[in-house]
View (cartoon, rainbow, N blue to C red):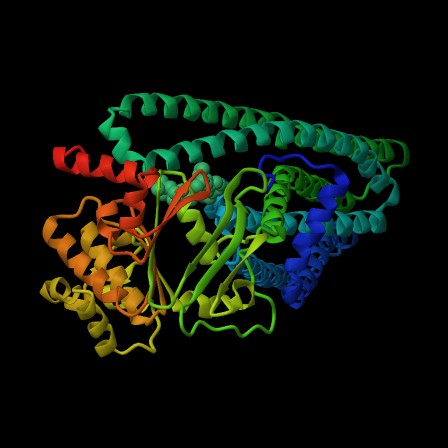
Length: 596
Ligand SMILES: Nc1ncnc2c1ncn2[C@@H]1O[C@H](COP(=O)(O)OP(=O)(O)OP(=O)(O)O)[C@@H](O)[C@H]1O
C-alpha cells in the first residue's frame, strides 16, 4: 500500500526522488536549458556592473580626469547592460515557468492516466480525498519545487559569478568573504534540521485539517441529523489552533535563522573588508575608492542569494515528500484486472458457468468458497442471502472489477480471463442500486458520451424502460441538465435513466442489483415493467433482497458466509423447508405486518 505518512528521507533517497522529478522534465529539457543560458548571462552582467562603477571611480574620478563625454558613455553602457539584464531575467523566468508548468501538467496527466487504471482494491483502501490530493495538492507542491530549484540555481550562478568578479578585482578581499562561507553552511545545516521538524509538523496538522473537513462535508446530512455540529466545530477549532501554532513556530524559526543571521554575517564581512581597506590606507596611503564601492555592493549580492536559497530549503523538502507520494502512486501495482493479450473471446449467447470459484479481497479473508453454478442463455438466476453473504462479490468478480485466482468462470465457453474487458463489460449490462450520473445532460448520461448512439436510439432505449415519459415532461427534455451525481432527480428517475443506459448497449447478459428501496409505488411499477422488458430473451443474474420479486426465477442460489447452501426453483426451495424457506417466511410475515 502507498506509504503516505513518510515525510523524512535519507540523503540518498532524497537524491533518488529529486532525480525522478527531473526525469519528468525530460520532454522540456531544451526550454530549461535555454532559460539557464539566460540565467548565466544575467548573472554575469550583475557581477560585472559594480566593476564598471569601480573603474569609473578609480580611473577617472579619483584622478580628476572624468569628462562629461566619458561619464555619458559610461552611463549609457551601464544603462544598456542593466536593460539587457532585465530582458534576460524576464526571458529566463518566462521560459523556466513555461517548462515547469508543462512538466507539472505532464505529471498530473500521468497520475490521472494511472488512477483510471487502478483496481477497485486500491480505492477500497485509499480515501477519495487522498487520491484527489495526489493529483492536485502534490503536483502543486512539485510546481513550487521547480520555483525553488530556480531560486537555488539563480543563487548558485550569482554567488559563482560574484566570487569570480571579486577574485578578479582583489583576491585577498575575496578570500575574506569566502572565510565566512563555513559559518553560513553551518547555519544552513542547523536551519535544515530545525525546518524539517517544524515543516513536517505543519504538514501533518494541515492534512488532519483537510481530512476532518472532507469527512464532515461528505457526512453533512448525518452530522446535522444527529446534532453533531457543535462537537465537530470544537474538533475543527482544536486542529485549526494547532495549525496556527505550528505556523507561528515556522515564522519564528525563519525570523531568527534566515535573514537576520545572514544579515549579521554580511555586516561582519563588510566591516572586516572596510577595516582591511582602512588599514591599507593608513599604512600605504593608496586606497582605491572604487574597489571599496565594488566590494560593498558585492557583500549584498553575495549573501542575499544564500539567504534566499536557505529560505527555499523547506519547500525543497516539501517537493521531495510530494515527489515521493506521486512516485508511489505511479508505481502502484494494484491494477484493475487485465485480460490476456491477443484475446478475442466474445459473448454471443450469454451462457455463464462458474466452477469452484474461491475469492478474497485482501488475500486473507475468504469471501467466496467453492461457488459453482450455471446460467443458460435466456435464463434468470437469482442470488439471495443475508447481508455480507457474498452476493455482490460474485458480481464484482464476474464484471472483472476484482481479479480471481482460484476456480474458473466461462461465458459461452471462453474463460473470463480470455475476453477483452471492454467487450465483456459492453455485453454484460450492470445496473446497481446506486445509479451514478455524471455532470452533463440526460441524453449524455444515457449514451455515456458515446456519440455513435443517435438521438433516436437514445429515445428508443428510454421508451423501452419507461423512462421516456418523465424525461419528455421535463422542461428541456433529453437536454435537461444533470447536476452533480443527479442530485436534482429522484432515486427512481435515476434508476430508470441507468436502465436506459444499460439497454442502449443491447447487452446479452443483465446483472441487476435489485433496487427498489425508497421508491414510490408508481415509479416502482415503472421500474418493474422496465426490468421485465429488459430481461426478455436475456440471461439475467439478479441480486434479490425481496424474495417475492424472484419467485419466477429459473434458479435461486442461496448464499451464506460465501457458500451456496441451497439451489433450486422457488417451489423446490420452499418444499425443502431450509434456509430459503425461513427467509421467505420471515419476509412474508414482515411484509404483512409492515415491518420491512
Ligand atoms: N471491497 C471490499 N474489500 C474487502 N472486503 C469486502 C469488500 N466488499 C465486501 N467485502 C466483504 O466481503 C463479504 C461479502 O460482501 P458482499 O458485499 O459480497 O455481500 P452481500 O451479500 O452483497 O451483502 P449486501 O446484501 O449487504 O450487499 C463481507 O464480509 C464484506 O465485508
